[in-house]
Image (cartoon, rainbow, N blue to C red; front, side):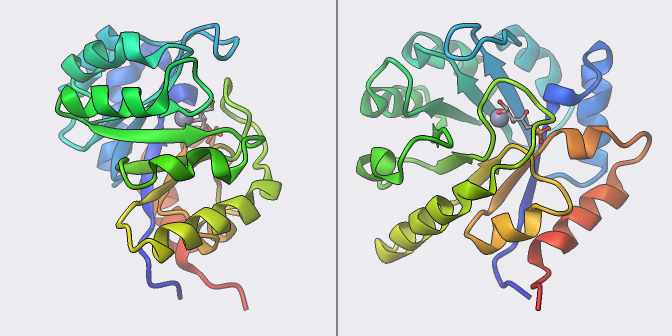
Length: 226
Ligand code: DX5
Ligand code: ZN
């Protein structure tokens, strides 16, 4: 049994957008630790999703932390509006146009926690300069832009490498894993060093109460395969 706890963060991208507030409630009543909101600008990724007004609307549905995952080319322009909308943590991509250090400073300047995400094809070296300044490292295990994609297990060695580097530096920096996390992939992802497991379609494909699937995911995360 792995000692590190696994957090479950519900990605709303595959939730029923006609009832987003209810879907937040369903996830929180099911016992998730945080809500993960996928923000896409139609430029950094082809898809276009939500803006600050949506976060503002669903924020009052629950008191768990809200993580805004900005898949946008210019996060500097958006940091304040997502902070003001009530995001507790704002994640920008290291691949975005803006300088990551400036983005991290800006997010902290708005009184929020700052996260940095890296895509599957981006080497670990790209984020090493920022590990000491961020509050979450988000390792993408799908190419950003859509929910419901298959987990890219070839990312696992990079995840382990980053976990080792964070531990070597003695940082208390959690690693998020985002994309294709389900009952089969959550175990290897957690074993490789993931802490905050972002789950979208594997949650919202379930009808009704989410407690059973959330509990099953937690159990699968820390189950050590002999
Ligand atoms: C993809 C998003 C992920 C994704 C997770 O660009 O960042 O959060 O929606 O959804 P699943 O769990 O369905 O891969
Ligand atoms: Zn995401």
